[in-house]
Every structure is written in C-alpha cells, then in structure tokens.
Amino acid sequence: MTLPESSFRYGTAVLAATLLLVGCRQGEVRTYRTAKEPSDLFIVPRAAKPADVQAVAPAAAEWQVPANWSPQKATGMRLASFAFTDPTGAVADISVITFGGSGGDELANINRWRGQLSLAPIGAGDLPTQVEALSAQAGDFSVTDLVAEKAEQGKPLSRILGAWLRRGGKVWFFKAMGPKDVVGSQKDAFLTFLKSVRFAEAAAHESRGTAGANTNDLPKANSAGPDLSSLPTGSTLPGGAELKAASGSSLRWTAPGDWTIKAAGSMRKGSYSFGPGGVGDVSITAFPGDVGGPLANVNRWLGQVGLSSIEEGDLSQYTSHMEANGLEFFLADTGSKDALHPQRIMAAVVFWQGNSWFFKMTGPTELVAGAKPAFLEFLRSVKAP
Image (tube, rainbow, N blue to C red; front, side, top):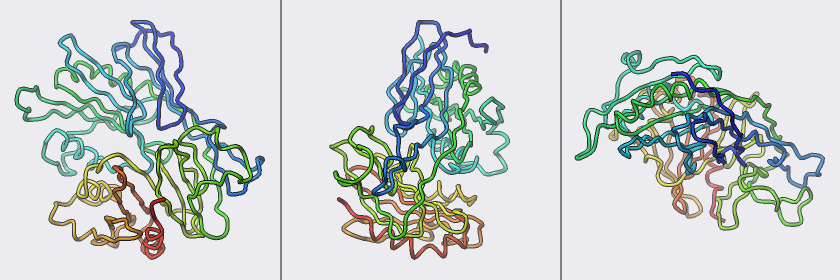
C-alpha cells in the first residue's frame, strides 16, 4: 500500500506520556511527533543554583498516520491512540505505548497478546510461525498477526496486529485490535504506519546523587533554584519524583545514598542506578488498576530475564509479602528458583489510591543478590504522604 503525498502540521506533546494531536484536511496523511522534552523539563538537585539545572532530552518519535485513522485521547499508559471505523460502524483500536527496559522477549510478548484473545500460550519452537521481521527506518520491528479461535456471543472474532521495536533502552509497542475483518482491512496501512516511524536521537543527561540518602520529597517553597510552580505536571524533580497536579498524591521513599539518581523519563516516577558502572537499575512506576494481577506481572518479569512462564500454583516459589508503614507489598524475585541465570529482577507492588505502584530492581544476578538487603530496606522507607 502506498501512502499519498502529504502536507502536514506537527502536533507537539507537553510530556512524553501525553500527545496533543492536530487536525488536518480530509484525505491527507497526517504526521505527528512526540515531544523531545526540551528545557521545560528539569532535573533539579536539592538547593541547586539556576546554572546547575540540566535539561532532559530523551529521543522523540514521529510517524505518519493514515488519513482514515481518527486521533483519540491518549489515556492511561498510551503515548498515542487512534481508531479506524468501517462503514458498518465497527471499530479497530490502534495504540502506541513505550516502556523502559526490554519489555520481555518475543515469546512473552506473543503469549501476552494471545492471552488477550483467549488463545493458548505457545512454546519457543512455534515462534517462527508467529513473528515476522519488518525492516523500517526506525529499526527492525517484530510483527505478529493473531486471530481468536472463538468469538464472544453475538460478536465477531477478534484480531490483533502487533509490533514492537527495541531502541535506546526502551521498547515501543504498536497494536491494532478489533473485529477480525476490520483489523485485517487495515493491515497494509498498519505496516506502512510502522515504516513511517522515525526517531530524533538526543542524549539523556543524568543527575548524580549527592552524599547521603536520596529522597523524593518535593522542594520546599523557599528552596534555592528556579521557580518550580511554572513547570508542567510530570516534570522530574529531586530523587526522581514527579511534579503532580494539586489534586494528585505520591508515595514517598528514601533511597540508599550510594544509589545514583537518573532522569526519570516519560513513565518513571523515580529512577536510580547502582553497582559498578551503574549496571544495576531501580525504577518506580505507577499505573491505574491492578495491571493484570500477580501472575501476569510475575510472568512478565520472568520473560524479561529469559525464564519461562509459570502457572498460578507456582507463584509461591517466586513471591512473598511484606508490610511497612501501613502499606502491604507483593514481592517477586525471579532468582528464587533459578539463581544462576545471568539477569535477575526483584520487584514489589503496592496498591494505593486506585493505582498499582511498582518498585523494580534489575541487574546481573550476583549484583541484585548483594543489593537485596538494601532494596528491602528501601521498600521499608516507602510511605504515604
């Protein structure tokens, strides 16, 4: 399918977690880009002088959207959202989401989407029949086309066109889902959409932690440095905290003094590195709802370190619980059964005010094992404001 030549206008997002879309004349191919997050996003060391403030400029993405896709509000975890409606009124939903880290291997991604269609999981030997490579200017996409075997009563079979791309320490997911024939009618457009994706590379700056504990407490009103009241919601502050709207609330924590504060980025509430060369990573994220529940989350983390998925009855081999400051944590450790695996993830989830907060430590197995006591102490410092 060949896209028509387009005249376009750019829509710019205020933050990487949101996308403001601009309209265009009927029949045009629309081009949108995510924000590069210029100097209005700051990492502000405690008591910093204005000259010490560093801009954070992660990579921006842009793409050409087929003229018959309608832009939708990008809610929740979505960076962008579109819909295609056929003449009968049936709708295919198209989404773009990005996460830090590997996002799981091909098998984990395929089985997650198969689960959404009530299809049985597959083994690694079946992957060649499920995934195809697509070379594009943004890189090499992994693409899958899945169709449900059974339909809900009175509804057509569902279908997922999915693709993911790993780039710059992140994974980008592109997905079209809806009735089988409606999604199928957009397959060529979806592939052309993927081929149009491109990135503007930018160097990410890190803010080095100071001696002593790193906290995510917001600066006091009389703190030295720039006027924070004018920064947009989502700007990154000391210790990786996020500047929130007045009505929002955030958990608080104190990180070990030898952890290095990193730019939190578009999805993270907090971000740290640790260990020789900073190879260990700690992330804090929060999402609405239960985000799939314990089994789905544990299987996602197992997939990210190359381990096979488990069944409900095996959860106790990898999980435990702890309570601190009135908060109940669900803990998972991918090294509980396979301690010799090269990579290990320790994670904790706490449900608070309708959101799931994730505290996750990733790195080489021996490094994570040695940092486990510090990570647990870090979790014990987490508290509600």
